[in-house]
Structures are given as C-alpha cells and as structure tokens.
Image (cartoon, rainbow, N blue to C red; front, side):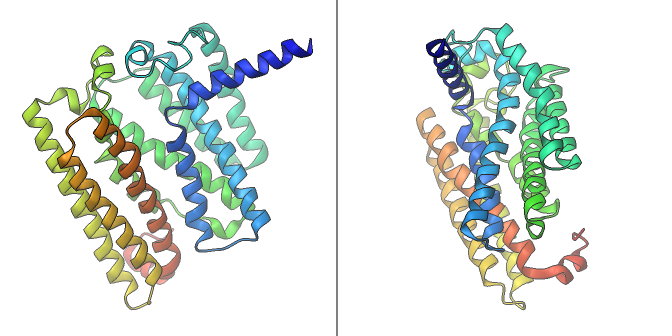
Length: 318
C-alpha cells in the first residue's frame, strides 16, 4: 500500500515537472523578481523575506499550472514537434486526465487565493483563467495580435496577483498598476522574439505568428525594427528616469535604468547577429528575460524613490 502511494506521488511529480518545465523559469523568475524589486526599497528581516519568497514560489507554480494545463491540452500537435518531453506527447498523461486536472485546479485556485489572501487576488486569478480560456480555448482567435496581447495581459495579471499576495503580508510593498502596464506594453512590442525558435511547431499547429506571416526579407526587417525599439524604449525610459530623479537625487533608479539600457542594447545587437534557432532560443531565455526582469525592478525603484509629488504631477499616481 505504501509502495503504491509512493509510486503515485512520484508519477504525479514527474507529470507536473514536465508540465511546468518549459516556462518554469519565466513564471518563477517574474514572481521572484517582484520580491527583489520590493525588498531593495523596503528591506525585511531574513525570516519574513524568506516567507515572501516561499509565497512567490507557490503563487508562480499555481499561476503556471492552470495555464499549462489549458495550453498543453489544446496544443498537442505543436508539442509533438517543439516539446515532445511534455507529459501528453510523452504518453505520461492522457487528454482526459489533463481535462480532469484542468477542472479541479481551475476551481480550487481562485478559492485558495480568496482563502489565504484577498478577494481581489481571487478576482485577478479568475480574470487570468478567463483570459487563458479566451485565447487558448474559445473563441481562440488565431492572429499574432492576440498572441502578443495574451502575453502582455499575462504579465500584468501575474504582477497584480503577486502584488496582492505581497501587500497582504507587508502593506508597504503595495505597488500601483502603472508599472505593470508599462512593462506589459514593452512585452507586447517585443514578445515575438520567442517565435523565431518555435517556427516548426507553430507551422504544424497552423498558428499565425509574425515569424510565419512574414517573408524572409520581412523577418529581417522585423529583427531590425525590434532592435530599434529596444534601444529607443530603454533610452526613453532612462531619460525619463533622469528627468524625474536628478533633482531628488534618486541614484538607485538611475543605476537600474542604466543596467536595463545596457542589457537592451546588448540584446539589440544579438537579435541582428542571430543566425540559427539555437541562437534565437539562447537570446530569448537569456538576454530577453534579463532585460525584462531588470525593467520590472527599475519601474518599482522608480515608483518608490521619486515620491508621490512627481507622480501626481504626471497624473499616474493612484
């Protein structure tokens, strides 16, 4: 009996690990980055900081689990080409078993958010499930605009859920919505970088991505336009930071803005020099995530260091 129980636990762990593997570091990194962004401004005792880290890990796992079940249950043909290690194409999980887990997790997750954190956390999580349903289940519009909008909306909702979790334990860690919206806009304009290394699976699944919609010449222009966007956007953010912080002597936001600018410029060069899917994959999981995470930290630093008067003058303080 004990052996059977251990075998079931090990099997479920293997299924869950393969289910979450592809996007594990993305989701986990985003939630942990939210903790780092806040603790740099409002330090906490080690025990309380560790508590926040554990909550963030739990939140990221829950957030990614409900997404991956819907994503993988509806994307089996693509996964057979791009990600054969996932549990359904690997034969570890049937579609029926995935649907059962889907129903249970989608029912319990908002309830857990309401029980342990707040009504708003439960509402945000329910919106997240609705957003996944709209894009991946029904009506499932097959257009690159919706793919971009989905990821942008996903990061905004993830940040709002994490903010509810963090501020429930430490109220001074509460951060308004506008930094999330700025980051979401940055994601919307650049997330197509993930599609260059997934073209084979997207072609099998007949997904309309920018990498497939454009000709070879068009893809080169897209790379150039993306590089220009990264350099210009990071430069504008740095100049905006300097104009807001120079009189208030907000040196930390200037530093974090400079780091983001350097990483964005480095990534722009890598985009133009990339010549293979392997280079595109390394670019997306390396430089792109690093630039994105530093932007999250910078926007939090900007909000917390320049004070309410400057934000009020811009009309972006809630």
